Image (cartoon, rainbow over all chains, first blue to last red; front, side, top):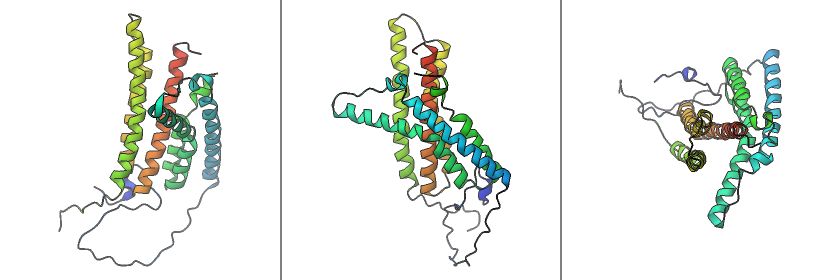
Amino acid sequence: MTDDPDDEALSWAGDEPDLVRPGRPVVAAPVEVAPAEPRSALTLLLLGVLGGVAVLETLGWLRGVLSVTLESTLEAGRGPLGTAAFGLNVLTRVVAVTAPLLWFALAAWRIRRPSRRAAWLVLGAVVLLPWPALLGLA
Amino acid sequence: MTGLAPPRRLGWRPVVALAFLLAFLWELLGALSNLFAWLGFAAIAHSGLSAFAWLVLGGGVLVPLAAYALAIVLGRRRPPGTLALILLVAFAASEALSLSLLAFFEVGIGVR
């Protein structure tokens, strides 16, 4: 196990390893304000472009899940269990629609290293392409 | 005390992981029921599933498993709130990928 959280696959802003070290007294460290991370124009441009892509993908997913083809795969069951299952399935569709924005928000907000953040943002943009809309499901 | 790994405080992390496990299992159940339903249709038609159908329907089974495992690996040392965020994004992405596979399947079998 490494002590350096940056050796993890992701480095997260504000997260430190949640460890209890016995025998080590807790000493209040002087509060240090971390300097604001300088964001280059390229970083801001990338965030803007990929944020726009995330919004467009969300709209694509909304169109996709509202298509007749995908709507027809949801069926309201009989009885309370069927209704509960239908409600859960609708909820999962809602979650799917929000996937691009959730991915973008988590990566842009929590990943500290610019190169890793960019990599995760691009990965999200590729993985979450709204295929139901792109395939033209009616 | 040298050589001893410091004890890790679990806190709410197992609760968060278990709660999301239920959500991923629900998705897995849907994918499995889809696969078995189409296997049943194919059996009625005295036929088998095509390689494309196996790829897409089998992918639907693998996606939630892989997404949950990846989220747990990425969030294993994070506080419960961050772990919950990672699992939420993984679940949303997994649902979106499953819908993509469903769309490919429906296009592939000519449901459009």
